[in-house]
Image 1: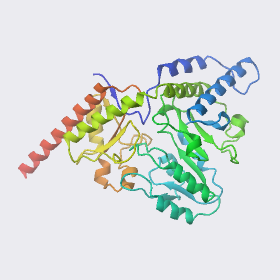
Image 2: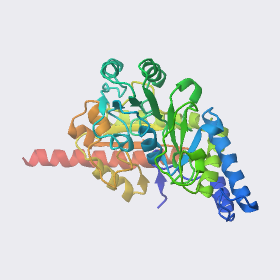
Image 3: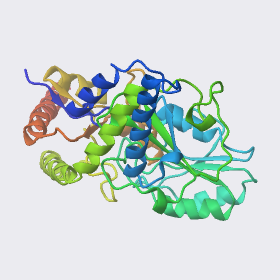
Image 4: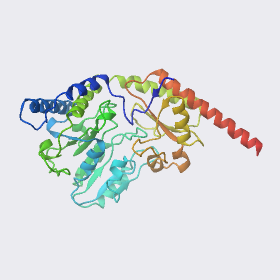
Length: 375
C-alpha cells in the first residue's frame, strides 16, 4: 500500500536538501557562543540561516530570535504585554489561546474572518500596554485575516500587535514591512524544515523582555545554546520555499480539482471559508453525519493521511473551536476534516483521498437507508 500524505499544515515533509544540511551541521561540535574555530563555524552557520529567514519575510536579520518552535515564539510574543488587556482572535491556535485564558476574544463571522467592529469595541475598552494577536492564516480553514487593518487599529490605540504567520509562510507572500506588526511568529516544520525550531521576528524598537534567562544568546533576548542543526535546516527550508514559489500554483489547482469533485459527490457540502481568500493548499469540509474520527480511521486504513484540524492536541479529535467560532453546530464541527497539500503533492494523492472518502460516504448512506427501512 502506497502512503498518501495530505497533512502539510500539521508538518510538511522535510526537503531532502534540509536533511543533508542538518546532517552536515551535526558534524560540527562547536558551541555557537565559543570563540574557537569550531565555535566560530557554528556561529557563522547560525547567522547565515538568520539572514535567509529574515529575507524570506523581508525583515532584517537582527530582528530574528530563534526559539524551540512556534509555540515558544507565540508565548514569548504574548509575554511582551505591559499590563494592559490581551485581545486575541477566537480562532487562534491553542498556543495563543492557552497562553492567556482570560483574554478578550474577537468574534469571527461565518466566513472565518474577524469582526473588525467587535475588535474596535474591545480596543476602545482597553488600557495602555495592551497587546493584540491575530493570525495571518488559520491553520484549519486557511482563511486569511486583514492584518494590515489590525495593525493600523492597534497602533492607533498604542497597543502592541503580534501576528502568527506560521501557516502562511511558504504558501503566500509574507512581508514584515507591509504587515506592519510589532512581532511575528514562524516555525520551520511547516516549511519542510526540521521540527523543534522556530523564530520570533521583533520590531527593533520594542523594549523586549526575555522569558528564558541565562547566557547572552540571541542578543540577550532568548537564553540557551542555539540549536545549530535545526537553525541550519530552517534556513535551507526558507531558501527552498522562496525558490519554489510557483509550486503553490500547482497546489491550488490540485485543491480546486479535489473540491470540485467533493461538490459533485455532495452538492450541498460546506467547504469552510471557501467564500473568502484562503491559503492555496488548505481545504476544510464536513461529511454530514459522519464523525471526523470515523473518516480519519477509514482514510488511514487505506494509507491516506489527513487531519481533523490542529495537530497539537495530543491526538485527540474534538469539535473544532475554530469552526464553532464560525457558527457551526457541534455536529457539523465534529464531522469536519482538513486536507492540506504541499511541495510533494500530486494528482494521484488527491485521487486516492477522493476514492476512499467517496466510498465511505456511499457506504454510510447505504447503512442509513437500511436502518430507515428496518425502522
